[in-house]
Length: 177
Image 1 (cartoon, helix red, strand yellow):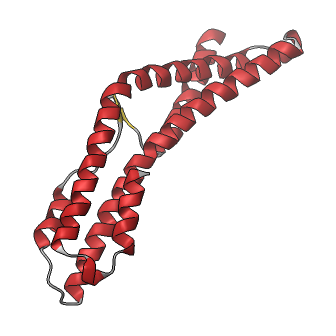
Image 2: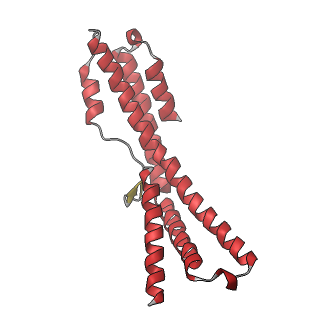
Image 3: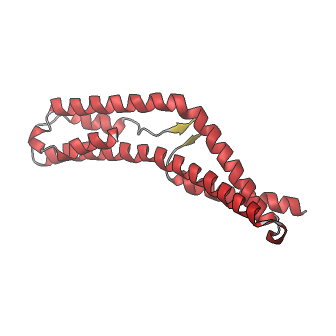
């Protein structure tokens, strides 16, 4: 939300008020937001890796049990429990990745809004300092990571789903032989 609010301030600011001092104020706000996110990442990075790994393994196990066992041999209660467990573990994994992936999206939107505003000023011939725009282009995009093992982007959801299905079927085929 902090990144989104800072981006909205840039978008709503008229060009004549998008002065050097306003740009510095925006960048300071962005710097505080990134520091807060970095602190959160430092605290929650390892627990998120463990949680994602546990959810991934549990999802593989449950989906493997659906593929491996005959449904006629399982009680209805056991089947409902398994479906519920699969939904909980998979949805929690997706929710973590979806939410953490939003940081990269908002960071990109911030950079685009800032650079677009500076470009508009250049096109209109207004006085602006291009050093800040250059710095925005050169600074790395902020992306939350899971212990520097994987990067939280929303495309990671499809990667995990594909891996869950692939490893589940590999394990099932290994058990059949």
